[in-house]
Amino acid sequence: LEAKEEFSHKTLAMDVMRPRRSDPPLTIITQDSMTVEDVETIINETTYSGYPVVVSRESQRLVGFVLRRDLIISIENARKKQDGIVSTSVIYFTDHSPPLPPSSPSMLKLRSILDLSPFTVTDQTPMEIVVDIFRKLGLRQCLVTHNGKLLGIITKKDVLKHIAQLANQDPDSILFN
Ligand code: ADP
Image (cartoon, rainbow, N blue to C red; front, side, top):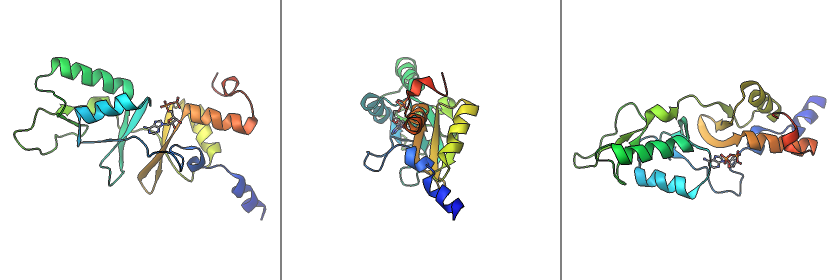
């Protein structure tokens, strides 16, 4: 009985991750089907530090994580210096380019800026453990999965807010500073 009671109080990764139930879905990038324009729109319409890259919207299988600043620099560079890169160019993070009709514009390979092993936890992981991992590994963000599918993200700031809520203290005064 005691153990059960203790368990019911535990905050899990799914309680802290974004998006919350009422939020719009996670902003993701697909590994080989978005155009330069699609990704530029994401960069312009969101301010997140990074974006999970998935196999496809349908599968939601995680491939990696790409930083916003690396995307901005790489696309800017490619548009300036790489022949044939236009708004309709398809961006791919895979090893090989996706099959496209011969008349399509040049594709832009961005595999080199992809973090292929971002840290992940399952949605049922107790926050105690998540906090510990952030501390010990110095993570900036961690992705949350369920049965191999991407569900959400927890950033360092999300963790700090969670701790502040627990302790009812100024988040800047604890843990990382
Ligand atoms: P920080 O948490 O340091 O402000 P971000 O700007 O990356 O870092 O994230 C702001 C908020 O949005 C956080 O609560 C985070 O969980 C969430 N978030 C981060 N990346 C994404 C994303 N790609 N899609 C949806 N929400 C995200």
